[in-house]
Amino acid sequence: MRFYTGQHQHYCGVDLHARSMYICVLDRESHTVLHRNLCTDPDTFLKAVQPFAGDLVVGAECMFTWYWLADLCRDEGIPFVLGHALYMKAIHGAKAKNDRIDSAKIAALLKGGIFPMAYVYPREWRATRDLLRRRLHFVRRRGELLTHIQNTYHQYNITPPSGQIRYRSNRVGVADVFPDPGARKNVAVDLAVIDRLDRAIHDLESFLVRQVKVHDGDNFHRLQSVPGVGKILGMTFLYEIHDIGRFPRVQDFSSYARLVKCSHESGGKRSGSGGAKIGNPHLRWAFGEAVLLMLRGNEEVKKKRQRLERKHGKGKSLTILAHKLGRAVYFMLKRKQVFQMERFLEG
Image 1 (spheres, rainbow, N blue to C red):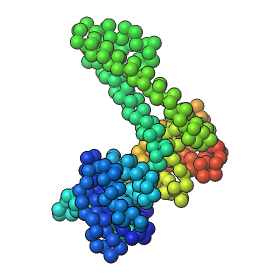
Image 2 (image 1 turned 120 degrees about the vertical axis):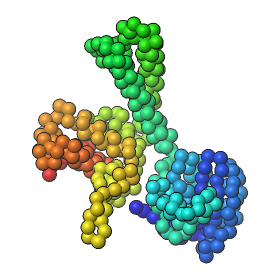
Image 3 (image 1 turned 90 degrees about the horizontal axis):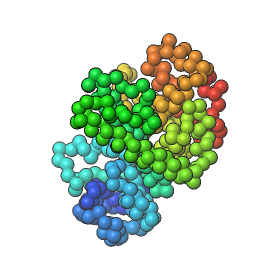
């Protein structure tokens, strides 16, 4: 965990919400010089902090409305620090809790050098990363609809179609086999939504491929040198990592990607592991998918997996391979090299 340790004349803690924001400004002697509830208006915020803008740092907890505040501070040349929500437990553990208290605690954490930092994703790539995550949401909803159609067939004890209905050419007459008009309409509605999602997903993917070539086409093609990694997984790696330089060590990257477990120890005794929800779930999903796709048609990787499975079991063997792939991607991006299978299979 990294903490913000910068020294300033004033420290501004912001308890940010969708319509309101409570701000607290402390000076170098920990005196409260401003404590006020404001509306989430950029001009109102700038007017409130203008007397302290000479040497001011602004900190806010990571929640869904931080984008505009980070961009505003960047445009005005004000340092902005984003707080890691899961590490900021000092805010949530008090007997009394409200926006006024929370803003004062954020300012105190900033001044005390114990403000846990999250990554402030840059504005230039942020919207495309969010769009890529939205695509995954649509794909999962599409999968749920396909599963619902299959379950409806089983409910009425009707043999499902021989072809896979995820392909549009195999959907003709899928709803007509149900004798009940309500069941036919149920399946027909699912198919109509799937058709709309197919078009939306295809349009999204075309747009994303154009965007990634503008942002970082070199690393995008470099990531696709990994067997099994195509355009979607390559974009996921690229946009979820963004700048590999923000990870000083490969261990930091593996932890961020949820590829390793963090042990809990006290008094020389280990009491298990924790922190499973701290990190990037999208990267963890992408590495897991990449390993499964790599195993298709790659005999060397299959043999490697079989050796690991005999020693560690099926589930853990896949986790180990995902960790190895994460380390490989880290050094690929660090050294600007393509994937090397012989090095991946070592060890």
